[in-house]
Length: 284
Image (cartoon, rainbow, N blue to C red; front, side, top):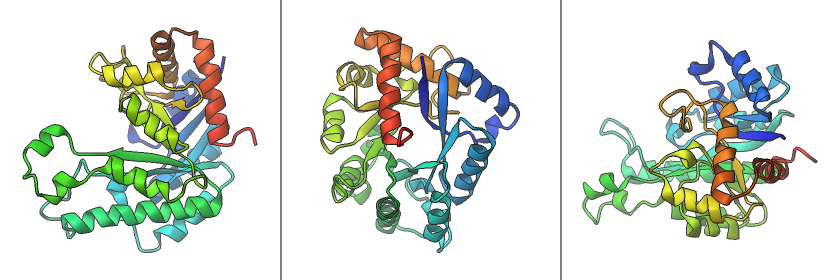
């Protein structure tokens, strides 16, 4: 049985002391490939360093929406060079994040902040199209508690990262394919993504008691349109919740999905590995 960890942040400082052991545990758990994700130019460089060091590690390079204001003017040319590395399998993670609005000290007002993210998102989609790479999407909206504190006519209240990301992606239909990482929506939202030719990916959230919506999605989603990830070091699955997640935990996520769908672990492994190999073009 073989599994693929499609989204981890192995350059995170929490892995500095024992990364060799982390990789070994992943192999022992049946994880044959790990994709480590860039969130900026510096992080993408680090991802490539790790991909060069470990044969089973591959990289995605990109600018996370929360980090766009930190990049220099030549970011796109730098990213293009990084993306040409032979172990780069996708651009990401990229997208829109409205969960953390700019502070009062930020030089960007809300409208400029939103447009800045949209600009980086579209520019990276253009680059993915140019280079023939698929993309890993991060999208996050304000929480309902945050929205309750805002006037109904405020721009931030009206921002919708989900709808905006899908609308922007629609311009690249059948040209650039995406995976919506750390998917937490319901079956209808999953269907909307899949209908546009994209995939979703489940994390350790699937094991949480307070996640019935995404569990229902895992029961109903077509077997060929989802993948597995940990988003390590974040979102450790039960029984490790509250600790550092690591790629070996992909097996626990697969086991939970097998339970929810009433199928064998081997079937989950076979279908999700095949989906990942197609999406990241490992089999080409």
